[in-house]
Image 1 (cartoon, rainbow, N blue to C red):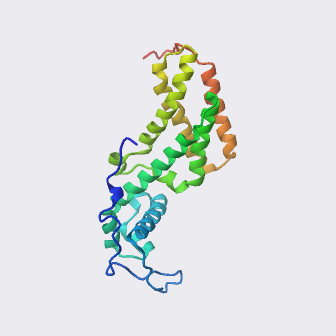
Image 2 (tube, one colour; image 1 turned 135 degrees about the vertical axis):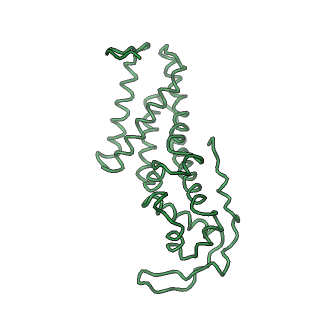
Image 3 (tube, rainbow, N blue to C red; image 1 turned 45 degrees about the vertical axis):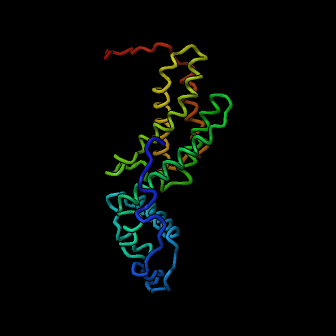
Length: 237
């Protein structure tokens, strides 16, 4: 991706939790259990997974280091030791989700007819929303961190770059200006992404049906595309 995060290495890498930082884990009844000993790598992954859930539930501003530490059964210094604070943890969570979605979309583009490639891209995004709902909720939210480490808009740009190649070939084969392919790819991917946000809440119709309708609109719109479209209303500028 164009922007890679510096946070992913953590503050102290994979150092183990110091004994002074560990707290007893808690069972649902409020009773303390024996201490859970984890390697530094295991603790880091635990904090990332807990952070991912809490950020999805409460958003960046509504999440605190205290809550993440409490759910993990550790003290706040452990979170700071691994990530430097809430911002560092959030940055790694966002980066991982962005890479996962991008990998799913690019990996789904296995070739075939241009319409089939559009179907593959639409399905990949719908699959991500379906299987990584918490991650998608995090990506579509704005936060102070998103301005410097990446955002859903920048991710859409990365995916649109993949679609741009498909449209470029389609435009050339039809005698259209291939220089317009980047703009059209942003339009298409943005349409799918916004539809995905809507579908996340309603969950109907079924995923395959949504993908079919998305491609129906996109493909038949492309099929009847005018080479030099003009506005028909009074507004010309």
